[in-house]
Length: 505
Image (cartoon, helix red, strand yellow):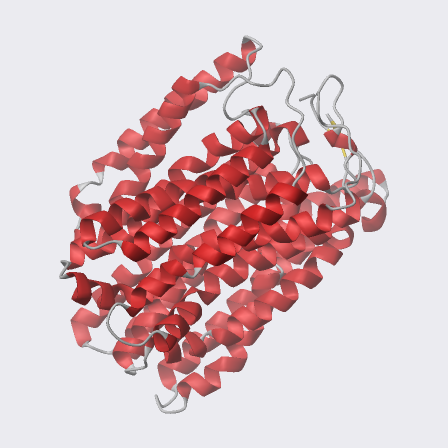
C-alpha cells in the first residue's frame, strides 16, 4: 500500500469506491455526524449522576440500577466492529441513519419506561444503536476528507469525543437541576429526541452514499466469535460493583481464547482471498494503527475512570450537588475542547509529537490537581485545582484528536468503518476497565480509613499510571518516526506530506 497524509493511500488499485471527489456539502455533513456522535458518547456518562434519583423513583435495587449505565456500555462495545464492517460493505449513510433513528426511539423509550426492567432493556437497545452509529462517524470522515482537511475534521471529531466524555456529569447535573422534582431524570433521555430527529432530517439531505459494488460479504461466524470474545471481557467489568471481578474472572481467559480463534479465522479468510470482518493487516502493515490503538486504549483506562472518581469525591466527600460536582471539573472540558480543534490543524505538521506533548500535559495537570486535592484544605482545594484541571484539559485536547488522525489516516477508505470500529472498541474496553477499577480502588481506600482525600489521591495515581504507559508507547512511536526521518534525510514537514510505503493491502 502506498499511503500518505494527503490520502493517496486511499485510492487502491481495484478498490472500488475509494476514488476521492470533494463533496461541497462535506462540512455541513460533518456537523450532523458530530452532533449524533456527541449524543451517543454523552449517554455513556450522563446517566451516572441520575442513578440515585432513578433508583428512588422506580424502587430499584443498586444492582439493577447499575445496569442502566453498564448495560449501555456493554452493547455499545459489542456492536462497534461489526457495525463498521457493515458500513464498509453496504452503505455508511444508510447504517448511520438507521442507527440514529433507533437511538432516538430508544431514548424516548428510556424516558417513558414505567419500571427498571423496561428501562434496562431500552438502555441495552440504545447502546446497540449507538454502537452501530459510532464507527460510521470516523469512516465518513475518511470518505469525505483528505489531507489537511482530514486533520481538521478529525480535530472536531476528537473535540467531540473529549467533550462528551468529560461533560456528561455537567450536562446531567444541569438537566436534573432544570427538571427538578419527581421523574426529572426522564429528561436526560427525552432531550435526545428533538436533537436526534433534526439530525436524521439533515443527514438524509447531506450525508454522502457509499459506493459498495462487490463488497457485500460479511463474515457472520466472525461476528459471533468477536461478539462472544468482547462480551467475555466486558461482562465481568460491568458487573464489578456487584463482585463481578472476583466471581467471573475466568471469563477473561475464555475471552482471550475466543479472540485467538477469531484472529486465526480472519487470517484464514484472508489467505483464501475472502474479505474478513477485521483485516489483520491493519495491525501489521498500516503505519501507526496498532500503536495508536494501544495509546487510545491505555489513555481511556485513566481518562474515563477519573470522572466517576471526581463525582464520588465531590458529591460524597464535599456534599456537592450533581450540578456543582459537574461544574468543578468543567475547566478540564473547556481546555480539552479548545485544544482539540487547534490540534487538528497541527497534526499533519507535528504528527505523534502532539500526542506525546498532550499526554505529558494531562499527566502534569491531573497530577498537580491530585496533590492539591490531597494536601490543601478542603474549603479551597477545588478552587486551587481548577487551573491544574484546565491545563490537563489542554493536554487532553492534544491526545484524542491527533491519536485518532495518526491511527486512521493511512487506512484505506474501503476499510475505514472496520478500522474505526476496532479503534473505538479498544477505547470502550479501556473505558470499562477504568470505570470499574478506579471507583473500586476509591471505595477500597475509603473503607480502610474513611478519608476522601486519600481515596481520591490513590485513584488518580492509578489513572496516571495508565496514562504514563500510554505516554511511553506514544514516545516510542515518535522516536521511531524521528529515526525514520533521519534515515531518509527529511524534515518533519516533508515526511508528513510524503508517501509511506508498506506491504500491499
